[in-house]
Image (cartoon, rainbow, N blue to C red; front, side, top):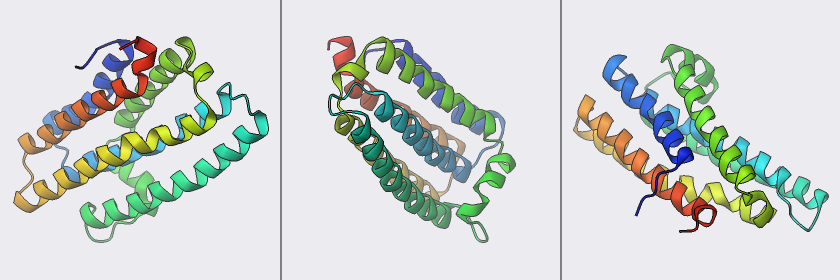
Length: 198
C-alpha cells in the first residue's frame, strides 16, 4: 500500500512537470526520456552526499574511498545508459555531448530544477531529519540508487520503445509519465519504509 508524506508529495509534484510539458509545451518522446536520464544523475549526486555524510562506524576514509568508487561506477552506468538513450530516441546527428544544448532546446531546465528540488527535499526530510544517516552504513547507501533506477528505467525504456514502435501520442506520453510516478512512489516507499514505521 502506498503511503503519502511530504517527501512523497514533493516527488509527485516534481514528476508532474513532464505531464505539463506534454500537455502545454508539445514535448515529444525524447525530451521526456532525456529528463528521466538526467534525474539519474541528480540521484547519483545526492547519493554521493549521503555516502559522505552517513554515520558509518568504519570512518571517514572508508566513506571517501567508497564514494569515489561509487562515483566512477555509477557515472559509467549513466554514461552507457545515456549513449543508448540518445542513440535510440534522440534522432540522427545527436550525441551525448550535446545534452546541455538539448536541455535548453527542449525547455528542460525548469523541469530538471523541479526534480532537483524534489530529491533535495527527500534528502533533508528523510535522510537527515528522520535520522536515516544514523542507521545506514556507507555500503548500504551505495547500493540504494541501483535498486531504484535499474528496474524503473527498464520499464521506461520498454515503454518508450513501445510508443516509438506504435506511434507516439500525447496520451501515450502521459501514460508513460504516470507509470513512472507510480513506480517512483513504490520505490520511494520501500526505500524509506523504516523512517515511517511501515
